Length: 228
Length: 88
Image 1 (cartoon, each protein chain N blue to C red):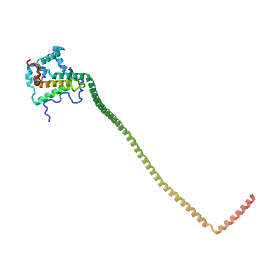
Image 2 (image 1 turned 45 degrees about the vertical axis):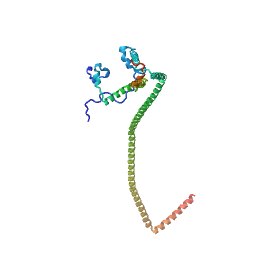
Image 3 (image 1 turned 45 degrees about the horizontal axis):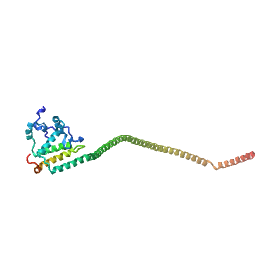
Image 4 (image 1 turned 180 degrees about the vertical axis):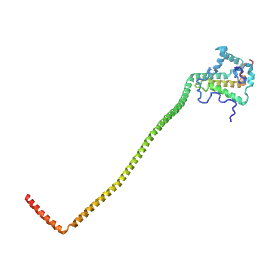
């Protein structure tokens, strides 16, 4: 349970994205005194005010010997000279080197960010392509449905044909049976007539017919001999 | 009204000279408060002079100068003996 007696999240601050670092730090004059001090004294004393203040302070410290001149002063003077000379001579080189390091860091970070963006872009493209392919599946299913319908149709027609041929075979059988029966009846009848006729031929008739045949043959041979 | 800001909330530069005593008395002198003040001061200095793209010499040189002054102040009782004049 949150007992909120003060309003929460009233400011626009949020942790991300971070604001970029400022380009340059606060201005410092002579490497020691911030510029704000000079601006603070400018309305009242003009440009030379802070330098006058500095000179007066220095003289005061020296005269009252709050700053004591001893061997350490000489050492400090030598060290300061060397430091100032080194800074003036090697400063820009070191600054350029540090800037280059910074640039490299920024470049790697930027490259990572760009790469991540690129991967996500390609992922989006791939996704869109997959969606388009999914649409194509509809056509595939239509074609398959057509195939199946054709198969069913072909099967149905085959079976119709089978039925027709079976029925025709049965009917042909019946027709063949009937013709066979008629044929047999006819043959039987012919044989029966022949048999009865042969039986009715008596021996007397046989002799007469043979004699007639011989007479006919003689006549024929005569006419034939005559023709030749 | 802008004039009705509490004394507690004014910054040091806006405090009038007469109110300085009461303003100092109102500050938080608990250990937590002192640590908080040190932290705030450090953050201000750091974000103004060091945590920038192209930091210059002034950032560290001011810290070193402050260290030099502080160490001179701590060793003054020892340096005092090198003075050339006894009375100023």
